[in-house]
Length: 437
Image 1 (cartoon, rainbow, N blue to C red):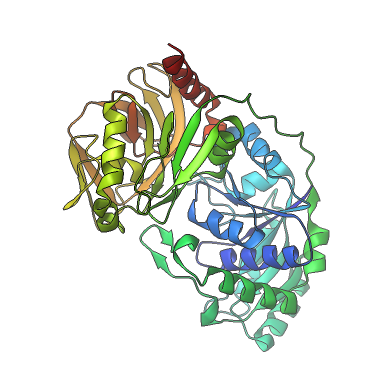
Image 2: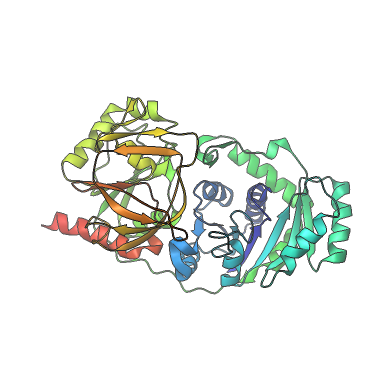
């Protein structure tokens, strides 16, 4: 499989849109394109999936480990794989480059293309780009200039290639029609807008016209990985909430459930009946945006509450926790856990976490360690015992979270089961044991 990374000096340079355009342009050339995002992002991977026509994956050393990163790629092979780097190329955990796009490109030994958007500068861009290209171990082999005119591109291309050992592959002009709206946790979800495909298609047309796709293909590096072998099939039915309120799922998690269990997707907003299931999986998303619609669906809220009261297995992350609480602000929710959640005007938790289980639960035994991440502006005031002991992997931050009621478990952290297979297998083992007795 051939692979390359699209990166930038920082967030806000436009690399997501250029990544989408490249993926769609390659797809239109009949390439089987697999898309990935470095880091823990959920929203960009949905746009990448829209561009490629297949589920995208996450490449993250904290959530998956180095072997897990390779397994995530092996799960989603294609003729060409395009990975969009998170933040800036060298931006990793804390103040270092660990788990950055740079770190992952070194791990995989793949080249990177730098998207650079000049901001009130001309020749000053040259030493900035040169520093990134010449940094020890850098895999940057190409540059794409974003939001520049044809004339400005010609001037900068000449100087970049004169002073830096790198190819300038093309440019994208500034175009308001190529912008995607954002909200408090990132881009508007692709599931929420009918314009996503139009924007991606327009980006692909620009890429075909002004960027050297043949050179991008030539810069791809071969990545040899063995086939990913899924765990054995289980006779377990899993219902996964998936709609505009709940769509924050790692592709690896969905792949694991789909290939080991019988999965049925449903909408807590639209559907009035909960699918027959042995496990209900409620992921993250924007339940706060759709709290009125969720609240109005009394039949579904009651079905979820009845599931919990009857000892059914429920696993909920972030937005799923909010849905299981008594209310989101003034809107009644399922009431599995006593308490409520509410939005604030700033991030409450942001970044990677290490979780130690404070007692036995469906994810493991007391003392087991799980890696995850949190990213939310909401707070949950839950009147239940907290069973997760959480620490930041860097720094001194410590807090508690995680709530258990019968066989329902909910917490703010998201986990990628591919990097926490012990927890995944324990969850399925626990369900099988419960229903076999």
